[in-house]
Amino acid sequence: MKPTQEQILRALNKLIRENKTKLKTQKVKLATIRSIVKYRGAIADDYLKASGIASNAGDQVEAILKNVILKAKTNLESIAKAKQQVKDLGIDTPKELLDAETSAKEYIKRAENNIKTALLFQKFNG
Image 1 (cartoon, one colour):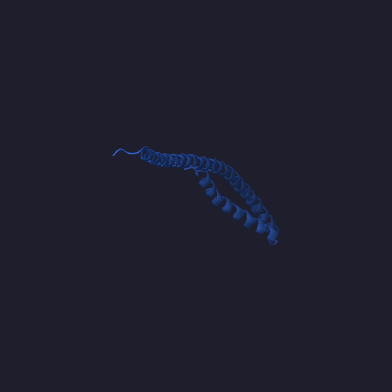
Image 2 (cartoon, rainbow, N blue to C red; image 1 turned 90 degrees about the vertical axis):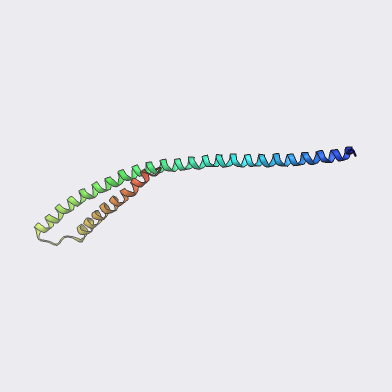
């Protein structure tokens, strides 16, 4: 028995629908892959940007902290001279002078510890 024209049209329509569905699925998959690859590139760009900022910040922070250490050491030298002068006069060392000495030593300690952090920022992109 020969298929009717109507049966042939139904069969063709069915095939066309199935192929369109497959094509649509493939297009969606390709679009998803492209967007993932593009997004991966955006992530890489942001990471590189953060690395550059961190490295530059690390350089700047290190320079400032080294300057803090230098100033604090210079201040400690002045404090030592002042303490000797006070001692030579036979009077008690003023509390302000002792506080300044403690503060300078603390700044040196903190700056030295924070330089380590600055060095880590400089190596951020590793």
